[in-house]
Length: 349
Image 1: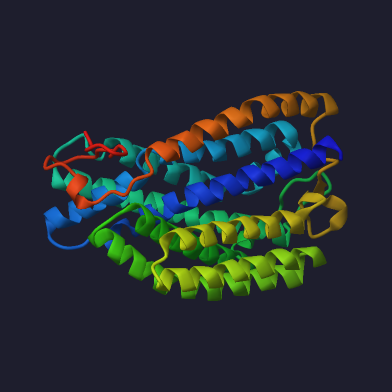
Image 2: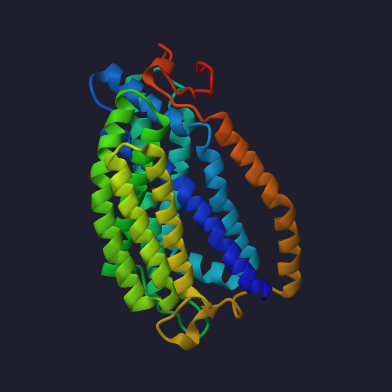
């Protein structure tokens, strides 16, 4: 197998890790204003429970995006250049949303003021919704193909990206992340938040099954190859299991099912692309794993570095999830205000 193909597959794996892990992060942020209810004190307590479920891991989850972007830049520099120049505005909006989200996470508890926390919560909500929608729009456009000239420059303009297929892709990722986040909250929290998250996941899973099913079948029929029907079937099966498990409040099974659904959608996306990395309306102008890749020497060095460092990163992140594996409830939230992260087996600081 050529190294360019190996790195195409590795980048697909990196995106899979990012969308599965950061997907429930986005979902929790998106649900912050929906599940946090009651009077001011109860609402703040519930939101702090929700934030604490992802508090120890959200920044580690974002490393998958940085690694995927860096790997694309190093392994396929022309793909990176065309993608970031052609999709400049949507990617800039995603970047700004992620920055706002990070600031809200870090600064929410710095000032003991209700208005300050309210603004931080709004920033978290917006900073989660914007990437959740725009990642779907971006990937759907890549699957559909874009208007590239002979020099592989995008010439389609911003509004061409807002086509029906791409907008449905944005709705799909938003719903998938919402459901994934609700299932994660039901798995990681206890008390009122767990009950409300479980009930919402049961309702959302049905809508997600319908919308995601329509987008996946459209992508398969219009833009994909025969073997990726297997990914569509597995994704549909996972979503059906998710619906049943969410209704039965079997949170562990539901979370695994939603994760499998995300994995198979990534398989559908990257399977639809190969051997292209960015298909053009005119196939002669498409970027492929061959004409967009770096030299063999660069790819060889990258492969050795990845082979050494990737197991260490996976072990560390797995250890982190193990340490913070226990459920969090309102009883773990101390009386003082602000953002605190609950440690497994201990009261939060």
